[in-house]
Image (cartoon, rainbow, N blue to C red; front, top):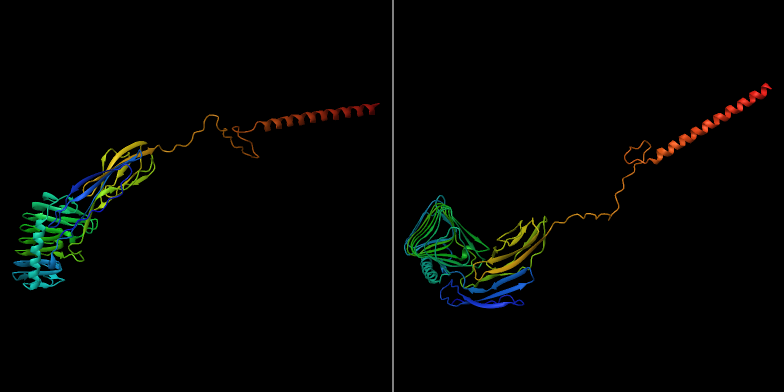
Length: 432
């Protein structure tokens, strides 16, 4: 029986308005409960306000495949291999008995055991039928899907008619280690050549299941993730890699030079899986300055990890938002104020939004002295024994020198006159 639990959200903030709503998520059979969601709305200060939401949903864990878990490949009518396929796990067939193309290089090899029409294979097929029916009974969280290329999907149950991933296409499954994805294809599953299925946030192949109403084909060199539960045949073409299992209930499994790894260490069925809607937890942004490197991080709780977008307004010129990390960074180029709304989403309703105001100050400018406010800068005086250049020289020294020379000349002239006058007197007395 599936179990649900409501985990209380963050404490109400001052002035918060609490509104109730309901949602449902049914990734396992017999799930009919609803889960309450709490919406918190708060405004703090002039430059920060938020619309935050918090809701937890606890659900049963991965689809229980029972004794089929160790099998990398299990067919009903036959298992046929071409080339050096490697199966990390068991290979089995039941109720028929044909398994060909194994026995070691240059043919296929396996790390587990071959079960050919034995009790182990028979029980595994019975458990596959149960798992197929369980996966079929789940209530979809998203219906009407078809082409998967370019999608990034959070945990849930996804249903459609014929599901496909186009050649060279990419599908991202974003969640945590306990997150579960179930895909319901009413008819076929076609995975194109050179496609990639990527898991982020710690998500694992343990918890990805593909319920296929008829046959499944995995294209050349595809990188596929998950356990295929097909009512009819499964074909893995040349070079395809499967992190999961190929389990066919009523037909054959055909392989060609593949690598198949059955997940190990998976949590048992019934292990609680918790998802929660995002709630923004970061406060008001710090101020910035034109020309100075800046960084501010928007943070939010929630499982799986939220991503971030600017849903209203424009960030200051020079700043950008990293949608994965929530970091707003760059070097502002214009002063002023910008108000933006940033929304955090993770596929669990409702989203969370916050209003931020970013204030950018002008670049610092060197102080200019007011008129008369400071003394004029004095020119430097050079001391030298030589002559000074006219620019910056002191005219007092040449003037004093000139006066000294003139005084010395006058003194010499006066001494000469006295000397001549004394000589003339001696001559006159001698003559008398």
